Length: 179
Image (cartoon, rainbow, N blue to C red; front, side, top):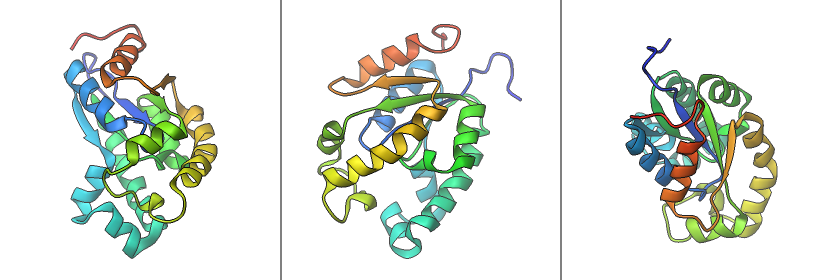
């Protein structure tokens, strides 16, 4: 149970390239909360990067690690959490996210995802095949899962981080919360 003056945690969901990490960092700073990226925590706990986990354990091994991390992190009060793009695929994760905090779905188009994921950190799900086809397929599967748990949906295409943060801030439950 959180103290009465502890703001609810905010959980950012959405596809890769939607801006979860950049928006999360800025939103946490704006609200005076701790920022946590679930992928970073998985890497810290395992001692290896996510591409290595995918290579050794496959997606199933990664998703099991992710499930444990999401359960732990969503139990923490007063954080802004950026989740991995596939975190909402797991029903347990969806339950934890939706019931333990305020979920913001950062929606973005496949075109925007392509622009934002080019030349960045390695993304195991984009390593094989056509990235556009992969992103479109993943979005078709995951969009309903994101929407199922989202308290609000915020469009990020063509927008700067500051504008997205301002919109989330204005749409928080009970109005904007002062840090």
